[in-house]
Length: 261
Length: 302
Image 1 (cartoon, helix red, strand yellow):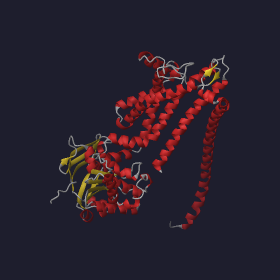
Image 2: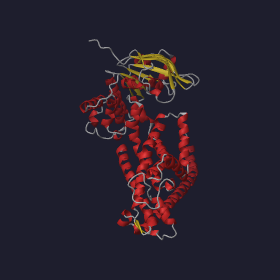
Image 3: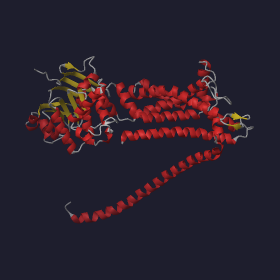
Image 4: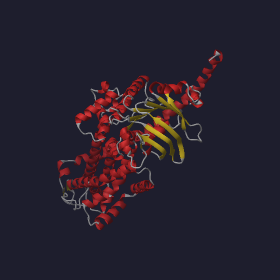
């Protein structure tokens, strides 16, 4: 049986503007299914802005305007009539700061499926267990699912947020610097989770750590804003090994060798 | 780090300078602590003086007869039950009219208005509403509810008038309670494919509920203690315990006022007793709200 891989993003000449100021300009890239793409670059280079275009979270806050085309499995997600609510069930997100709801661990995970209309207890139970297992948190919390999620440690909270995002069975998972507030052990756990998850879903991760990009990603995109007068753009996107060993663009080389940023 | 000898002398010098600077800072710290502490002591004294004096003067009048009886002997004897019942009715009606509308408005302003010009106009209007003297509400209530809507002098007209007094408090405190929540909470829900409305009623409002209830209790307490808004709209010098919202009724604050201003009625016992009952009722309500809130908060963050 030939299964078509879903979770493919194609970006065609994408620009994002906040009010009159253009933040990111002319991005063309392809995000392949069941792989990890890392977005790297110095602060303010538009990595997070670009990431938020992929699940249209830019719609909700501020006055971001997106031009160009973003296709998910061939369909333009900014087309009239395409519902951001439906999109976000297919494209999950994990934020920089763990943001569990102030409710029990179970309720946190069940929130997404309930939004999708899952009501049966057995079904919810199995989704909760499965999601926690995939986020490598099940063994630590299986006896305390009724505990308030805010009682968990920072690293556990972030893995809970991953589990919560996985519970809606998304095809793509966006991660915005998910380890920037975590200790090395928690970071390692999340990184190994990422490597496990990519067997089934597409992951786009924004990271400040080039080491992390090198460890977890298949392809890496380097973004840069060269001056405050000009919008940020994509400098280079390549297989991670190639980008870090022999970058084509001299600006990429300067960045990865630590000459700026 | 290279030349040790010059390093040897400098720390002693700066050490001396620093320590006198530190001493000055510590003196200021002590002074600040003393001044703010004295202010606190003053406030605590005033609060205890008020409560203490009301209890001292009023406790003697409290009896079964005083709370559950009716006034007797041209109001020089007997109890205040009609006034207690009237105030309870008024609080209930005020809650019924002001809380749903006020909380919904607060939710709209915080979650859905996106800082539109209309929302800014609403803010100004609500701020003005909070600043209107309560006797003006009384006048408006009389014209609008008693006359125009034909409710005459009744508990209904009083409840509606008090609801107007309470609305700005409820709206503002609801909006503040919602705005205090981190934006990340809303983002987390939206990113899971929840609509804005689902995010609001499943995540945002339940999380902010303690704050919302606090505001509601504050508003209702104020309504329970108001005299001016009910003056023209149905409060009675003497009336039987109400049986319908279309009747005028007695109310604790007004009863206190008339008892204290009738030169021919020598009833200080009734005055202080009424004061104690009113203050006691409001204290019990806020204490219950506070207990519920802290229990909920413990559940939320611990």
